[in-house]
Length: 141
Image (cartoon, rainbow, N blue to C red; front, side):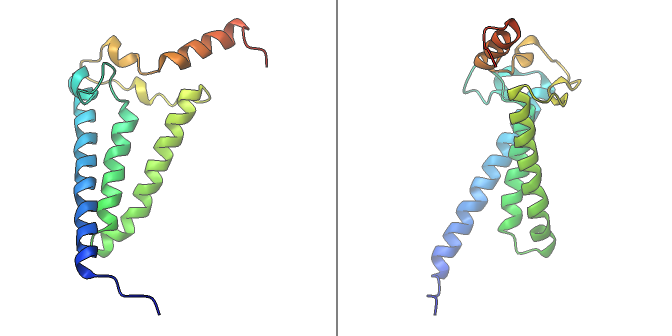
């Protein structure tokens, strides 16, 4: 027979999960608000010169909400956790395929207010360099 978990430890893990989920949701909302307001520093969460991608902000919001739904007592919330988790996976796959150059969904070309050239430089330099090398024929296939 499996040992019964300590209720105090379980409550601690649930509290930790809720705190992490809310931090993730707030970070995602700050990223989206930074994109909408045209504030590069806000969209970068003040940790770097480049803004965090809009799809990443949406993924943070969906992931945090999925975690909140997973630890919720509500039946409706428990049903929403898997679709939200699937949305996070789809945003991650879309972002990965966009970085690899295999797919352009146009998500980063959305007509947002106050958009500047800094926001359009969302592609890391190594990816831009590898694309140039592929186009110029430097890399052989």
